Length: 191
Ligand code: IMP
Ligand code: MG
Image 1 (cartoon, rainbow, N blue to C red):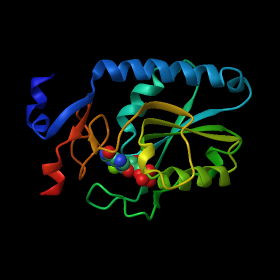
Image 2 (cartoon, rainbow, N blue to C red):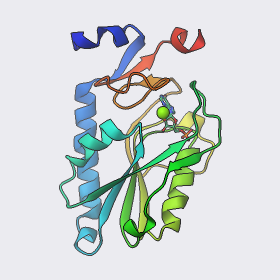
Image 3 (cartoon, rainbow, N blue to C red):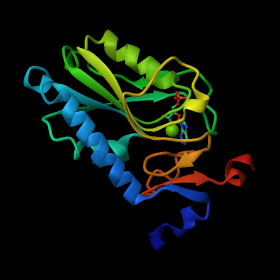
Image 4 (cartoon, rainbow, N blue to C red):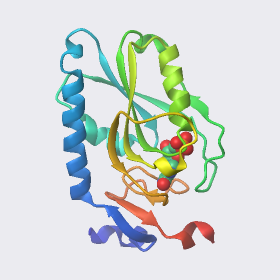
């Protein structure tokens, strides 16, 4: 492990996915996405839309594993207050210029699919914008907590119901810059 991250590491119960696991995931997802859109990009734009802020690290690495011409955009949605459980109300806090996605194949890129409320809302929002298609790529999937009827099309890893941080995932906005994914100690958020 990188000694520079000692301070944040103390707050982890364990490392869940290390840099090698992440690289393996990026190669696999990059290949799956490239295969799925290889023909359609000859006719339509492919746009990756990252959901701020949790997807930025993943998105930056993932796009460099997709061997096709593509564009990127970002959206922001908020449902979490301070804490580890979503409040359930999803708000789009940064919108898109809808003209940019009209007729395009869109992949929504998100850090984690949890209750699914965020991606349910964003998928509908993109579909309403006149996109040709909307698919979902998430780094992690926590099926145990699903409330909304939604699945991920391109999935990194499936995880248990534990609170994870790092590689974009935060707790109260901290830990996003950890270069791997860990389980946050309960004592940190149950204090
Ligand atoms: P959903 O709408 O409940 O699916 O919420 C998804 C959002 O909740 C994600 O984009 C994350 O920001 C956040 N989230 C869910 N589970 C975790 C976790 O284990 N660690 C950090 N953030 C999480
Ligand atoms: Mg978050």
